Amino acid sequence: MIFEIDFNSTEAFYMQLRDQIILGIATRAFSEGEALPSVRKLSEDIGINMHTVNKAYTVLRDEGFVKVDKRRGVVIAVDADRIRDIERFRKELSIILARAACKGIGREEIHMLIDEIYDEYKGEI
Amino acid sequence: MIFEIDFNSTEAFYMQLRDQIILGIATRAFSEGEALPSVRKLSEDIGINMHTVNKAYTVLRDEGFVKVDKRRGVVIAVDADRIRDIERFRKELSIILARAACKGIGREEIHMLIDEIYDEYKGEI
DNA sequence: GTGCCTGTTATATCGAATATATAACAGTAG
DNA sequence: CTACTGTTATATATTCGATATAACAGGCAC
Image (tube, rainbow over all chains, first blue to last red; front, top):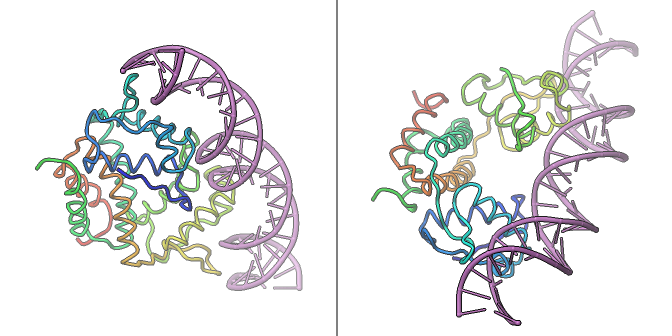
């Protein structure tokens, strides 16, 4: 998987990286147990500092997407906490749905977009 | 409508305020053409600086939710730019849907959440 | 006009967040 | 021992967020 940092974005580098890795897990570019590149290797590849990569990894660990294996480094390990996950999802959804509703994006349209996007991610079938 | 700032949140004050106002428009607590409190009044009411409120208003204007009426101040005025709005919505949705998919939140569950939330917002019927 | 309300602009200051850099450390593997 | 993990400690520079004081232009009521 190739990571790309937009150096002109207002979004923090470590946040961009975090989102891309989560996207990678969702699209199965990464699978459970797979090791991510080391902080030093990845930082050289994408041209940012080692500590910035480390911060992305730390956030991913705190959010339950990876864990640190002392032998292999950072590996994909999704830890689902149903109640907390849904609560967080609901909160994020509320805000962007409010934006959509204000802008006149209809419910049906949203459902279609969900299917369109979700089909690219893992899930039942 | 009552605004509440969480002073312990990592989220910037002006972002919290922005989101609450958008939520207010979506739930019809505010309607098209209605004036928002003045920057000075609102800053006193919620206990933050005038410039912080002004920044929230400026962002809302840039994002097409309000406009400035030289006589009445800041008024609700949603400016929909279909193509741009959907593009932005899709991008935001992609990220949080990826998170949800990783955490094992199913498609059906998401559709249900959408309906649940969207019903509180404006839309057809 | 005067006075009072709008948003806006200009400075300045302070702390926190972001990103970088160099260096060192503990643990694991070959 | 050597080479690789992540981690920690400092230090520095820049940007962002929030505050503060002050002033300005425009609209409106009197």
